[in-house]
Length: 354
Image (cartoon, rainbow, N blue to C red; front, side, top):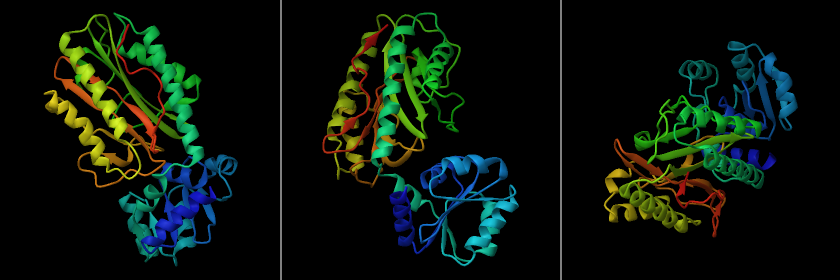
């Protein structure tokens, strides 16, 4: 935790700030070890304070590391306590609430909304974070085994999701609360698989379906993300061709990952192969993204990215092909960037037929 705070302050100083204030639970957790409703404050001397409503104070004291926990009334009480501590400081904050920022700027002249110190610190994972991500990935692999054993003709997408989430929660793994979806998982059979971010439905699996199963779950705060595409019985020659292309594209992308490589090169490596096989127009998203305390973090593995991979970044590589009204294929792994990348998922990427 001390090293994390040093990194946060280092990046704050680069934008001429000496104090960091976080309102976001992910950044609060990274800074303090506590995930909850509170404001986190990190001062230039390393002193760390959590300002929390009374209902959160007990847990904040129990879960945080080397923090002073201050009780305050919800709403204006929290802000008043914060302002009293930072009004003379040069402050950087991740606050995204307009009215809160208006209040803060009235009382704290040198406050800057900027998330860079938080994301720049979080982008490189420490050994504790890597161990958690590895464990999360192992649980997801176990869930793919459940797919192999439990997926069958006539089963609803929602039924398989229930089986998978029951197991996940038994392993203390939970949904991410990702705002853009109503479901914790993506389980998309047949034509639903052609929608990269399909919602789970009541559709029943049929013979000849490809089923895109994207498991994005949180363990001890951290998100692992992997996708496998299963076949139910014999699939069409086009679907098998698309699967083989995606499998090879992902293999090419994984082999390209190493420190100091441009992120866009990973995307281009995957995309070029799919284009060569005349499916370029069916690969409709970027090749990957960073993972950590959020589902999508820096860096972006996209042709638009200007970032370079660095050792101990955690990223995904996930090319896909989506043929409208027919099927989708995606194969995804989470990995740690090294000279020889640590691919955290061991479940086979050969086509599994159930």
